[in-house]
Amino acid sequence: MDPFVESGRRTLRQQGEALTALGSQLGAPFARAARALAACRGHVVVTGVGKSGLVARKIAATLSSTDTPSLFLHPTDALHGDLGAVRADDVLLALSRSGETAELLRLVPAARRRCAATVALVGAPGTALGRLVDVAVPVPVPAEAGPLRLAPTTSTTAMMAVGDALAIALMEARGLDADAFAALHPAGRLGRMLAPVSDLMATAPLPLVAPGDPVSVVISTMNQGRLGLAVVCHPTRQLVGLITDGDLRRALARGPAALALPASSIMTTRPRWVPPSTRAAVAREQMTRDRITALLVSDAGRTLLGVVHLHHIDQARRSSPE
Image 1 (tube, helix red, strand yellow):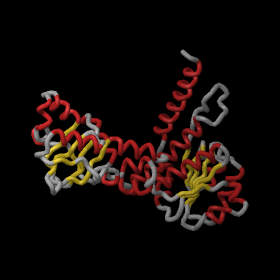
Image 2 (tube, helix red, strand yellow; image 1 turned 60 degrees about the horizontal axis):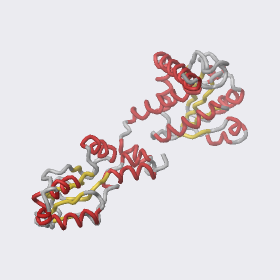
Image 3 (cartoon, one colour; image 1 turned 45 degrees about the vertical axis):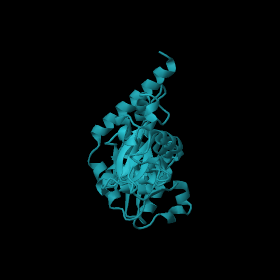
């Protein structure tokens, strides 16, 4: 085996085993921490130094993206004036594997005089930081990855995982639904996939033909529409059927006389459609499952509202920053 692959697998295995063990040890301190954060009426102020500080930034971002207002505060900056960012309704969440980080040991007592509660993620609850805060959540790991067991690897992965676990626990406790989540990510890929198809569908011009239009007109309409289909409708946009590229090829296989056939003779009479409130991700799953590239968007009365194509959804995913 390639030595790089072997090393990579070993590191991932070590970290996976550490997370599995950590999950089995999660208990009452985690619950108390989650309740303290859930009761927060202001911001969760996340802080840490070095690699723990980088993890703290990520946890703050995850909390905010799951509807728990949060911000990152660097301990050094806080000790030199930025402590004013901490308000009475806030909860301080400090990260330190050693639990002996000098800046945090100076920051927490000052923050406790200003905020509602203090919580820490520490390597062990008996550390100096663990004794200073209201709730200390132990995040033990047997060892760092790598031959020297020194570089912060497994410990930072564990801290980040516990931060994610807190964010999801709060998200579930609040009952954050897909609509609320999409509202928090209006420009991101996640939000776009949770958006209704009405936000993405083509509405005009649509490749519409009447039931009596000949196949020659269907071909022209499909070429202009560039969706690989033609929708058979009454003038009031009441759905009658659908003609796909496959339907057209099968008709033309009959010979030149097929060009004069009416659209109603070659159409699919029960086209697949979805209501406008259908989420983009659900529509995409249906297309993949049914091996099709587009869905009609219709109301309960079978009135055509638009067409959502696979490329509409994929383009939205590619153009989003997340």
